[in-house]
Amino acid sequence: MYHKTLSYRLFSILNNTGLLFISLLCIIPLVHVLAISFSAKSAADANIVNLWPVDFTLEAYRKTIDNPIFLNSIWISIMRTSIGTALTLLLAFMAAYPLSRESTSFKARSYYSWIFVFAMVFNGGLVPFYMMIQNLNLMGSFWALVLPGAVNIYLTILMMNFFRGIPKELEEAAMIDGAGHFRVLFTIFLPVSKPAIATLSLFSIVFHWNSWFDGLLYTEGVHQYPLATFLQTVIISRDMSSMSLDPVSLALISQKTVSAAQIFIGALPVLIIYPFLQKFFVKGLVVGSVKE
Image 1 (tube, helix red, strand yellow):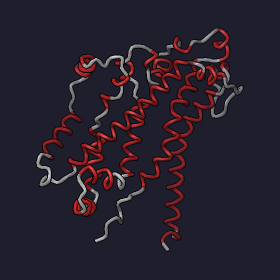
Image 2 (image 1 turned 120 degrees about the vertical axis):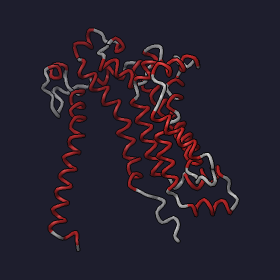
Image 3 (image 1 turned 90 degrees about the vertical axis):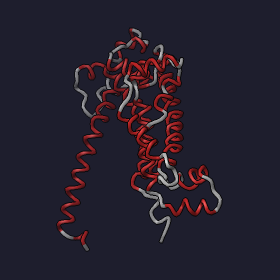
Image 4 (image 1 turned 180 degrees about the horizontal axis):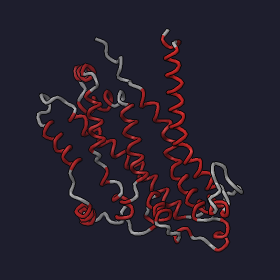
């Protein structure tokens, strides 16, 4: 057998070693941040924390969780990610289905496809976009974080290409049985598109969860900040005013420990969600559904 040959075993060893090395490069920074978050102020400020906490303490997490502004920002991010992802997927499905049809059944398909591609490559810029949000009276509204990114053309194109790969026999069989386009989309196409749906969901979740600049532009105070915007003001801008630190807390925690705790809490939801979606990336549910 080929898998028992020396060359194959050598390739497997080198391949596994390389993947292990890349995995360590991804994991070690996160472990380092976690170790800092559990370390005492003196150890963190002295830069002596590596991959294990020094003088273990939960003070940074305790102060972070006790901060109502931080908890409010988490709730805003959860709501934004949930509603934004659901809306983006729905609009992507509705747009990708007709665009995936042949030009004989949808004569304007090429015209609309070029409009989508043009809009993805070219845009009006930040100032006109800001003026549009302002004229629509969305400033300071939660929907200013959701609606502008509801139509993701890149994800729509990905879904369109996946729909084009679905065997036409599935659609034709449903049409013969009397199904309409909406029923074909939601009962035929979507159930066999789980790998694409998982990919689009992950892209949309990461986009909404990590987006911070729009929160800085379209909100009217720290009480409306999503988590990424809140972390940017505390970690990057080093504005600790929103942390409500008293003199006793300042003696126990530092900027580094609080920032590390918040970074880890902010990354935790994506780390939890990814394993449940990852299995669909390597699975093709359409293969073998139709045999000719």
